[in-house]
Each structure stands twice: as C-alpha cells, then as structure tokens.
Image (cartoon, rainbow, N blue to C red; front, side, top):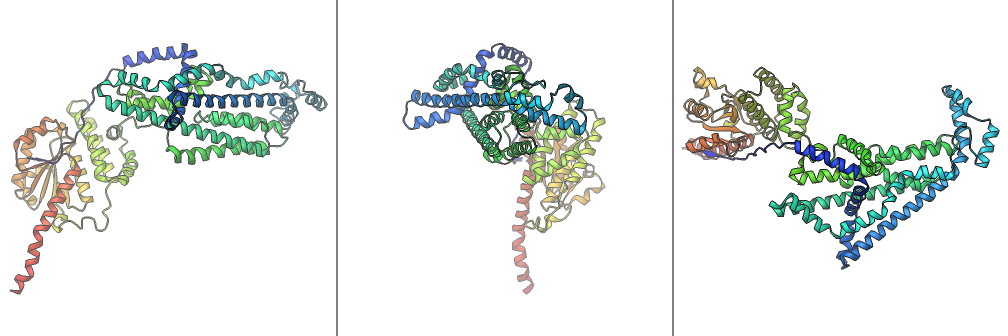
Length: 603
C-alpha cells in the first residue's frame, strides 16, 4: 500500500495558567512599588536598543568597546540635555507671553457668547470691561477671568511638569545605559541559560534576531518621530505660531503614544493659536497641519519603512498604554508601545512566555481551521466566504481546502467522536458548510484541463465515495470541487451504491477515492469499503483519502501494513497530483495507438 505523504502536526499539551497569573500579579506589584528603580532601568534598556547599532558601527572602526559606548552615550545625553534646555527656555518665553493673550481669549469668548448665547452669563459674570482688559494685558497683571492669576514661574512649572519627571532620573539612566551596553552579551548569555539552555544554538539565534529587529524598529521609530517633530516645528514657524521648537519636540515625543499621541500634541499649539490671533485662520492651519502630517506619516511613510503594523493588536495597544500610564505616569505613557513591542517579540521566541504574543500580538488568536469550525458552529460560515476568496486568490482552492476546511472538518469530527458535539448540531454544520462550498464553486476557465486526456474530462471518470463518518460526505464534496476546478470529470457517489443495483453504472470510473476523516472511521470499516470499491470497479485505481491524518496515526500504520494495491493520500493536493499522473500516463499510452490508426487504414 503506497503512501504519498504523511505530513501532520503533533498537538501541544495544555499548560496551566494559574502559576502565570500568580507570577504576573507579583510582577505588577513589584513594578509599581519599585518604579523608582525599575523605570530608569527600563529607560536604559530601551535606550540601549537604540544606541546599539551606533556602538557596533564605532567598534567596526576599531574603537575599543568601552570608548565606543562612552562616545555614543555622552553624545546622546548631550543631545537630550540640549533639548531639555530648549524646552525650558521655550516654556519660560511662553509663560511670559501668556498675560498678553488674555485680551484675545476674552474677546473670542465674548463673541461666542453673543453669537450662540450659551456662555453669555458666564462671560458677564467673569469678564471685566474692555478698558480693564487692556490695562491688565499691558501691565501683565491678572484678570478676573482667571488666566493671569498664576505667576510666570508657576505657569512655566505647570507647562514643563510632564517633562521634569524623566529628567529627575537622568543620571541614573545614564549609568544604567552605559552598563547595559557594556554587558549586553553577558546579559544575553544569562537569559539564554534561563530560557533555552537545552537548545543553545536556536535560542541564541532567536535572541540575536529579536534584538536586531527591536533595535531596527526603535531606530526607525525614533528617526521618523524626530523627522515628524522637525516638520511640525518648521511648519509652525512658517505660519507664525510662537514657540515652534517647543511644539515640535512635544509632537516628536507624543508620536510614541499610539492613536492618542497626535491629539495630545495638537491640543497646546491649537489653544495657543486660538489665543494669539483674533481670527480663526491660524488655529485652522495648525489643526490641518497636524492632521495631514499624521495621515501622511501613519499611512504612507511608516508602512513604506517597516510595514503596516508594529505587530500589536489595536486593543492591546490601548490596554497597554492605559496600564503603563497608570503604573508609571507620564513616562509609562511614552514608553508603553516600545515595552509592549519587546514583550511580544519575547513571547514569539520564548516558549514559556508565548502567552504574551497571544494576548498582545496582532496574529489571529485562532488558527484558520479553528475559525472555520467555530463559524460553522455559530451558524456564521457564510461570513468565511470573503476570507476564503482572498486566500484562494493568493494560493488556490486546493490549498484552502487542505489548510483550512479539511482540518476544520477534522476538529468537528473529533468532537463528534468524543460526544463533545451534540448530534443536533450536525445538520446545522452540514447546512453551513454546504452553503460555503456553493459560494466557492470555481468558475472553470477556458482551457482548464486541456492537458488532460479526453477520457479524464468525462463526468464520472473520478468518483469520491464518503466513508461512514458523519462529515465524510463534506470532505468528498471538497475533493470533487477541487478536481472539477482542474478540469477532471469528478463526481460524488454515495457509499450505498457500491453494493446496490447502481454499481453497474460505476464500472467506467478510472479513479475512485474513498474519502474519510480518521476520527469517524475504523481500520476495519475502511478495509470493508476498499473491498466493495474494488469489486464494483475492478478496473479503477483505488485511493484512500485519509484527510488530515497524523503521521503516527494507528489507522495509517495499519493500512500501510496491509500492503494492498490501493494508494493513500493525506490531502486533496496529493489526490489532484496523483490524478494528473494517471491522466498523463493514459495520454502517453494512447499516443502510439492514435499514430498507428492511419497506417492500418491505408493497408
């Protein structure tokens, strides 16, 4: 008995999640109460990913490792210090100019109240007369409206407060960054010993690959955010908004915050534009600038640079941002996405932490075959048709059946065999999947099957006979649909005709495939059907389609031991390839006979 293939996947054992949950709770508690130490260390680790390529570049120029690290770190922190100085000066200038904007704000507030009436009382209760407004604006004193009650220093402190937190631990981050860069290989080796010592080569390769990918991602992200901030600063300077450098730096920082970052960065310059100009044109230009720049950056430049996604699910990004912000405040808001990206990459390479990739990654939570079965159970198999068509366009109908539909049927048949699925649901599953197959019926293109011998294109040349399993008929229908799409004259024949009066009509079949899902059939039942098929169609080649069988399957092993003339295939693709081989063989055998026919007629 021949076996065309024995590909299969071994199921993975389930693991208890209780220890993981307990460990996670302890970890979160430690992160919260130890944030004074953990936050600088985390910043240093992320910064090390960004600076690692520069250090490697200097080392290739034959600089010692220590010198290369010190040069890169000093330059980096010098740039950070320079940016902090610029931010401080810009904030001080803004604080000094705030009193002069009060007249404009009050005038717009009064105009809105007079036009719409919904703030008239508030304006009347809080506003001073125009002369008083001008005096306060000229001398910088406070207004009853309340905007001038804070001193310049207090306003500057309020504006710069979100940036002062990270600067407080700058020295600790500096020291941590130097030591992380100097001991990166030692840290990697210790992590290898913890998570993958049993397979040293693969673990080291995976971790090196993960580190390079993270470094590349963070460098690209930093570069694009810096470019975004520079563009915003230059554009705001061109349109005349005060303090453009401050808003450019804020825009660059806030782009690390997904989805909401652009709106956070937009709010201060937009409010300033409203306060600076009596009209609304400047505010509208600021709004349009931010929105247009974000669309171009997010939809054009970022996908071109490193793809359409960071590898995170949108829900995971929102939850992670809220979690790290709640845990660590503004610093957590800025580094939430980089930390989550690190966790997802670690989850992809460390089996013990695979749940991180499942929870946070953008990969589908279920395998396509599991989704197929789930939708059939829920009565939503019709919703699979658009996804199926897209996959068929990318690959083929046969690939969709072998990789998605047949494994999904195997899952359903397994549940039926274990009594985990009520038989009442069987008819619903049949109806759902039959409806899906009707939507996926291939439109046979002109010329399809022309390479086949003419006899193999006749209806009934190939018969697919379902076994005794409750879902074997659906598997047979899939096989027939794939064969018909390739030009074969394939049909489904009920197993009842093998021993009845209709058996005589089956004798012209050239290939007969017994379609079985392993969970719904036994070795003895398969042998019984094979004998009946060989008796009803003695001239046909018999094939057993043992769909989606494991390579260590006891049923497959028992059938191989029989040593019969029938063949075994484990996928529709193998059945299709086998049918093409038989067709080509028939065509070669028919060619000499067609060449001799004219000679005999002349004689």
